[in-house]
Image (tube, rainbow over all chains, first blue to last red):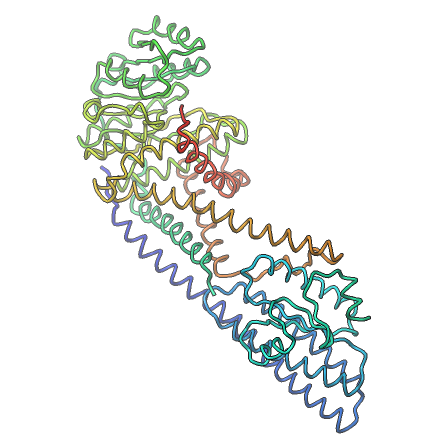
Length: 219
Length: 411
C-alpha cells in the first residue's frame, strides 16, 4: 500500500548540495561584479589623482589660479568619499572573498596621497581650508570602538555638510598594514583608534561634542 | 570574508533547504497516493476516551463517536473519567443510560494525566482494536473505515493516526493554529512515506490492542504519551501509519497563555521521550536513523539559534545605545538616511529564497489538506505563522528546558 520513499533522503542531499554550490557560485559572481565595479571606480580615482598632481604642476609652472586648484582638490575628495561609502557597503556584504580588502587598501593609499596633495596646495597657495583626517579601525570586533566610530562618522559628516568648502574630510583605515600610514600613526604617537587629526597638528581621541570639535577645527 | 556567524547562518540554511527538499522528493512520486487508504473489513473496535473536566465538550465528542460509520454491535465507547470536579460524569451518565455500547469508568482519584485512564480503558475493552479519542475532539464519520485497513494490511503496524485539524477556529490565535495543524498533517503524511511517523496524536488514533499490551501500554510518567507510545512501538520493531483520507477536529487553545501551556507540555513530553530513547540513536530502523536525530537536531538548532539571536541582538542594541548616547552628548545626528541602506549579501539572497520556498510549501500544504476552516486567502495569518508564530517556538523550548531542570512539570 505505502510505497517507501527512503531514497528521498539522499536525493534531497544531492539536490541541496547542488543548489548550495549553485548559490555559492552566484554569490561569487555577485561579489565579483561588485568588486569589478569598485575596481573601475578605483582606476578612475587613480587617474583623477594623477590628473590632480599634473594640475598642481600646471598651477605651479603656468601660474594657474590657486582657487581653481583647491576647488578641484575638494571635488576629488568628495568623489572618493562617496566611492568609499559604496565600498564600505559592499565590503560589509562580502561573505565569500577577501578581494575588497585589497581595494580598501588602494583607496586608503589614494586618500593618503590626497592628504599630502592638500598639504602642498595649502602651503603653496595659503588657501583657507582645514584638513581633518579621520583614522578609524577597520576591524569592528570591539563594541565600544564600533559605537564610537558610528558616532564619529556621523558627527564628521555633519561637520562636513555644515562647512563644505572650509573643511577637507579624509577618512583612512588605520590598521590595514600600510607602511606609509603606520609611519604617520607612529610619528604622531597614535596607538589606539579611532582618532581625528586636525591640520596635521591637533589630535582628538576623547569623546567630544560637536561644538567643541568645531571650535578645535575652525578656532 | 565570512565570519563564524555567517558560517552558522549558512549551516542553518543548508539544513532548512535540505528538509524542504526532502519533503519535496517524498511528495513528487507519492502525490497521487496521499489520500489512499487500504480497504479494511469491519471488526470490533473499542474507543477509549479519557476525560477530565470536559463537561463543555464531552457531549459533542460522544455524539461524534456514536455517529461513526461503524456497526453498533462492533463498537464500544469507554469513557474513563479521571475524577473530574465539574459535571462531566453527569453528562456522560446520560449517554450511558441511553446507549448500551457506551460505558463509564470513574477513577477514585485524579491520576494527573491521560495515560492512566487510557490504560484503564484499554484493559477494560472487549475488542482487538483500540481507538483513543480526546474528550474535546470530533472525528469524521468515516474515520474508522478509512483507518482500520492500515492495521489489517500489515501486522507490523501498531497504530494509525489521521489528519488532526483545528475545530472551528474563531479568534486570531486559533486561526493561526489552524494553519499550523494543516501544515503538520501534510508533513506527517510525507513522513509516513518514509516510515517516520513519530506520533499518533491524542485527538483520534487507532491501535492494535495486542501490540499496545505487548509494549506495556501508555507511559504514565510521560506528558506526551501519544509520542512515547509510538517510539516504544518503533523500538519493538513495529511502526505507525498516517491516514490523510480522514480527519479529526480538535479544540485549540483560545488564548496565548493556553497555547503556551499546551506547547510547554508538548515540548517537555517530547524531551522526556527523547531522553528515554537516546540510547537507540542510529539503531532500530527509522527511530534511530531519522526520528531521534531529527528531534535532537531540531532541539539543538532551536536552542542554539535563540541563543545566537540574543547574542547578535544584544551586540547590536549595545552598539546602537552607545553610539546614540555619544551622539546625544555631542549634539550631533543620531540617525542618517544612509544608515538605513545596505548592500544585500549572498546570505540575504539565500534567506529570501528559503523564505519563498517555505511560504510555497505552506501554501502547498494548505492546498493539499484543503481544510474548509482555513481561509487560504488570508495572507497575513500565513505570514504571521511563518515569521512570528514559528519564531516564538524556541522561547517555549527554552522554558520547557527550564521547567524540566526545576523538575516542575505536570499536565
